[in-house]
Image 1 (cartoon, rainbow, N blue to C red):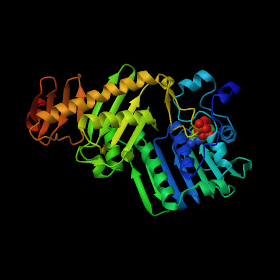
Image 2 (tube, rainbow, N blue to C red):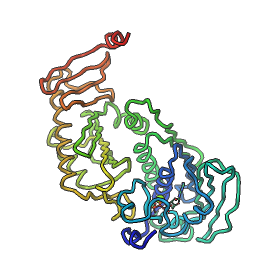
Image 3 (cartoon, helix red, strand yellow):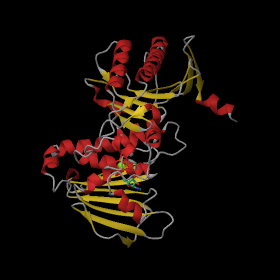
Image 4 (tube, protein in one colour):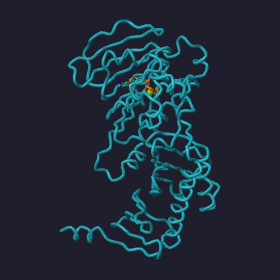
Length: 385
Ligand SMILES: Nc1ncnc2c1ncn2[C@@H]1O[C@H](COP(=O)(O)OP(=O)(O)OP(=O)(O)O)[C@@H](O)[C@H]1O
Ligand SMILES: [Mg+2]
């Protein structure tokens, strides 16, 4: 990687605790094109973090490069960095992880019949050996932070650390519904999210429902909109399901989980102004926009992002949210039942129309005329005969 590209990145430590290790490893598996990721955690990650993916794998040369600082196969120059669609771009994470735990990497590329194995302790490695391996990569980290008391101190008490680990897995599982995630905790508890089928009408919603409790995911309201090159997809909980704090709110940009305080503030302010409530709904906001519009290089965790054209992007968000909440208000006002039966399927199209799944079929609302027509499942079936 050129010095120019390196200088653009924050070289601070990106590993603060076990959940950071797992986050970086998941990102690498996603970048490798995996459709299945299997995770094993023991003792909150301090005893074992194991991740197996079915991605493109590494050659023995790639493996040796992967553990060097600032060697990333993903992009090389400044321009590429700015357009980069991969979750990793610094060539930093694996090198840092290898210095903090006893690491084993096994990997096999598609075009090879055998895999390769590399073992490191204290940053020193033994020669790469040929071995049996499935296609993809398996990384094992044992005794994380055994040589770093400061990191160990940083790690939260058992439960808290496990909560953070599960949160990371859930966030990526929601951002990437077409990847199957299997997690085993201390060989006892298993969390399995099979990959969503391409036929699923709303794969994001289907994933959210598998991961979150009914209180959060039941009757989620869905709204989508396009503003120039920016697309928004928003799910928010029904008015019955509000919370005291913003904790059930997550944000994704081009599938990547992120946080931005201004986005959170705008979302909650417009919601509370529109619905006159001081309580908070669960929000899942998905934004898609060209990668060149986002800067996630200022934060070592790559989680706190900045927008290059902040004013314009936040204005688009505001206008989208105004429409989303306002349309919902209109139907609520004119619906005798006061609550719309959403069953999770609620699509806004041609600006003024809302298609909704009901118990007996579908309904289409013309929000401009405040009129709603219902089509029963029988009539729908007949239409296709
Ligand atoms: N699961 C994997 N499958 C295939 N290649 C991998 C995998 N994990 C790591 N690599 C290779 O190792 C390199 C180094 O990974 P590392 O996470 O350190 O850097 P990065 O992803 O390029 O950047 P960042 O530090 O921002 O995450 C990657 O660029 C990639 O080539
Ligand atoms: Mg990476």
